[in-house]
Length: 224
Image 1 (cartoon, helix red, strand yellow):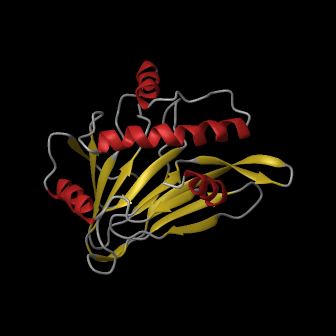
Image 2 (tube, one colour):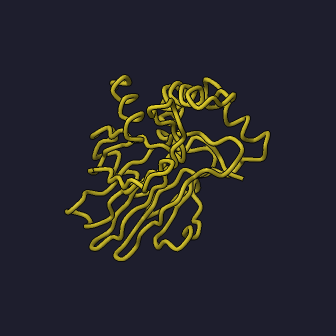
């Protein structure tokens, strides 16, 4: 992957789409987990006022997701530490995911947050952030497991970005089945005329108007 280009996109927009990286076959296989969840998964009620079905993986994610998560972290931690430096934050993330997760456990963050999301007609996910805990990794992975227009209509991935003294900026992340996107979890640095400042991001999924939409979110930190 072109990590230089991914860096630029994350810095400028807060997300970077990696078209077709997951692939149709793997996307279909993961979607089956949402239909027949296995022992790795636990059903959790919807967050906020959203409608849909959330199926959370336990801390140990099944293959190949666990391996992919570790590989992505190895690359993304460089960006995460650069962002912390830009925002004058003292903390630096460990180079390997296992070490970061150990820090999570030491402060009581033991609940896995990576999950599949299954949305039917009229279902949606409200604007929210996965920022619970003392150790929050600033980047996460999303993937679409269904084909827009063919499997469902509506269900767009939406983000909002709030910059100081400015109105919120809406963003629509264009995804097709098998696409992956790296997005900012909650906060990221933005370079203004007087240096870097912190912007706040939330994400949501708009109302599904027809069919069934299945998606995946992979997070690198646990919650309390």
